[in-house]
Image (spheres, one colour):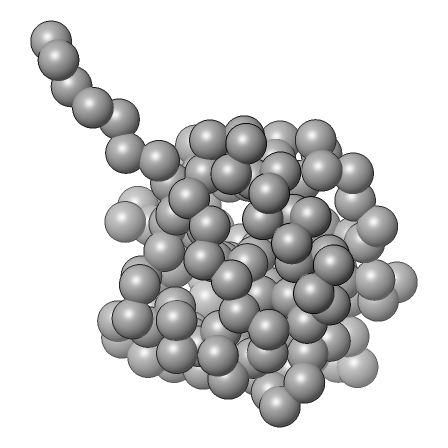
Length: 142
């Protein structure tokens, strides 16, 4: 049994360079491979190219906000079933911001201690099945 475990790939979409670097380093030290994007356009492009195990998406992003980026990922067949966690300082984002439905698998408010962020990511990745808030689908998220 000489099986090599693959590290989960997380795409971190965050516009603040210091925050992006801090979370990237902490996630890598916690056993994840991490790709990063600084805006929604880059985030959608990388998610489509890399098909990560999980996307951690800030909602307030330049060029294309996180809500639109998530909507586009959900609309494309290749990325529709990616696990996506919204990460935002908006106080009401977890319950819907400006009437928009949450189209992600989980919501983590900012600020968030790195240990709590890792716990949430591990929890989301450990799920065999999930019920999406908006999509209403149930099943494996491979």
